[in-house]
Image (cartoon, rainbow over all chains, first blue to last red):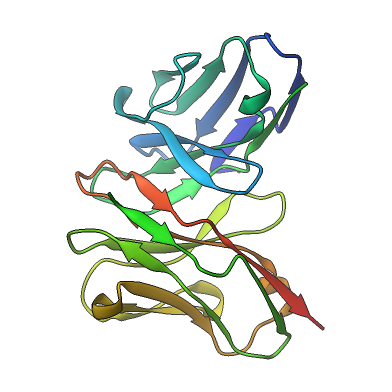
Length: 113
Length: 114
């Protein structure tokens, strides 16, 4: 069983489209994150939810909107995709606010044409 | 502002040789420090972490790291590298507030020669 899974693994789309990336965890962890890894492999946090509550919201365009329907899921919706959104997006989880280890998903490679 | 610097973008070592990957951080308080490894096409896996106590920490896959407050460093070491260690290595610092916000370094690509 995969602990942190993401769908899709690859996503190729045209500029201006709207797309979603899904993340699911079966670890029972309280906290979930979205990270963006750019073409130079630089990783930056985007959002975090703790028990469905938004706790981190970094400076990202408001075209990006996270949604957490329940504790096991954190989805990322992106409106009006731009070329610069091309990246690998990673979901991660953490057991609780006092447990520091994060578990990463396999990533979703988004390519905007 | 908190930051993490990995001075070496790319390192090549021969299989069986020792390895040291450098990491320097900038953070006002005692940091929580991590090393993650990313194999090609994969997510990140935690190698080891430092919160407090013994400044030499042991991790998985034979890796260790030493926290040196005076040098603001947390270098990763392995006495004998295996070909399977070829990967991207990231140093990270967690900021305060129990939010788990990680600040990552730029990463170091490790290539292993046979």
